[in-house]
Structures are given as C-alpha cells and as structure tokens.
Length: 235
Ligand SMILES: NC(=O)c1ccc[n+]([C@@H]2O[C@H](COP(=O)([O-])OP(=O)(O)OC[C@H]3O[C@@H](n4cnc5c(N)ncnc54)[C@H](OP(=O)(O)O)[C@@H]3O)[C@@H](O)[C@H]2O)c1
Image 1 (cartoon, helix red, strand yellow):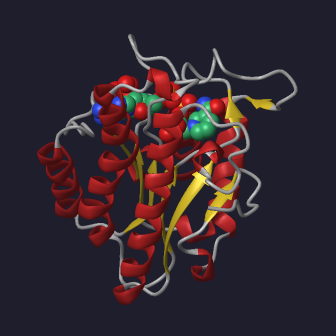
Image 2 (cartoon, helix red, strand yellow):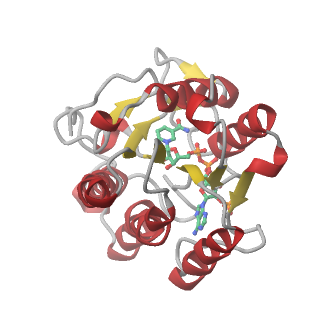
C-alpha cells in the first residue's frame, strides 16, 4: 500500500471488529498512524449500528465536528448467516424475517452509511468510499443459484452503490464510490463455506490487496464493482 491519496486526512473503517475490517484497520494504523484512523461499529464510541439510523447519523456528525478531511471511508460490515438462519438452497427455505434482516444489514445499513457519510467527503481531490459486496451478488455471474437472501441483498447493495456514485459525482468530481469483492477470506463469516479449490486469503493479505486496489483507483472508476485484484465484476 502506497497511501498516495492518504498523505493527509482521515481514514474511517466501519466494522473494525470483523475479520476483514480489523485487518484493514490495523494496516491503516500501521501506515498512517493511530491518530488518522477512526474505527466505527457497534462497540465504538460513538457507536454505529446498521439497524439504527440515528446512530449512523450521530457517528457521521461526530466525524464532521473533527473538521478534518476524510479521504477514505471503508465499510467492512455485512452478514452471511446468523443463529437460526442458514443459507437457502431452495425457494422452499425462504423466510420473510430472514430476508428482511439480510437486506437490513447488507443493503439498507450501507445505504444509510452512504446517506450520512458521503456528504462528508471533501469536494476537491481523491477521496474514496468503498463497501464490501460479494461476487455472489453479481446477477450476471450467478450460475449456481441458492443463497437467495445474501445474493439478493448484495445485488441491492451494488445498485445502491451505483446510484450513490452518480449522485456523488455531481458535487465531488474526484471522489470514488465503489463496491469491492474481497475474495474468499478466512473469517468467522466464511469458515463454513470456503470451498476447496478456492484461494482462501488471510485477512491481512486481503487487506493489503483491497487497499492496493483502492490506491490505484481514479475518478473514472467510480460506480464500479471490482474484485480484490482490481478486476471489474459484471453486475
Ligand atoms: N469473508 C469472506 O470470504 C467474504 C467473501 C465475500 C464477501 N465478504 C463480505 O465482506 C464483508 C466483511 O466480511 P467478514 O468476513 O470480515 O465478516 P465478519 O468477520 O463477520 O465481520 C462482519 C462485520 O460486520 C459488522 N456488523 C454486523 N452487523 C452489524 C450491525 N448491525 N451494525 C454494525 N456493524 C455490524 C460486525 O460487527 P460486530 O463485531 O459488532 O458484530 C463486523 O465488524 C461482508 O460484507 C461480507 O459479506 C466476505
């Protein structure tokens, strides 16, 4: 990571307690120093809970009050399963409450983060909002089916990123809003699902790659969906 565009200003990691989020946070702290990296999540002060818009708004307000440029916002939140909810192999397993929760965490929460945090990005110079989507959210790439709620919630996230990128460009022509696929990363989220044959990265390796991709982005890349090697993924 060269951190060219991060020579000044703050980097914010939302979800710094997650497998990938913690590795991103640690790498940024090592590169920029602890004073320039802010972690926001359910156990930070202020707290940010995706299911509570007021907490998202308050967390954004606390950043605004610092009065420093924010050059990077990295949203590393998300959920694949939780107790009582397994990934659906068939439409027979669809459950309205589980679908709503998946959308609340993977799509609506990040949308509310964009609502309150994108206006904090500086009007001049490169600044990046990146959110972790998943390749399985690609409709064009869906050859296997299944995982209905997770796939659909990430597809919704991708559309929300595209809309926000278009709106962001109107007042911040150098800013970038992007969805990233981290690859398969050894975290609590993935441990039951990492298929043999897939490259499974350590969180530290994924963090290096993802921040490397972000480093290399230009304004023309806003509103795209890329993997951890920087390759575009079809929507
Ligand atoms: N790992 C992979 O192989 C893989 C592959 C493709 C895509 N992804 C995507 O990458 C992202 C991160 O994955 P991960 O493997 O690092 O997952 P993880 O270790 O389970 O971390 C999930 C993060 O989301 C946060 N979170 C969940 N619900 C929240 C809420 N209501 N409010 C605020 N924060 C909340 C968690 O915070 P708490 O500590 O408070 O629970 C945690 O920081 C996810 O979007 C996932 O879909 C991962």
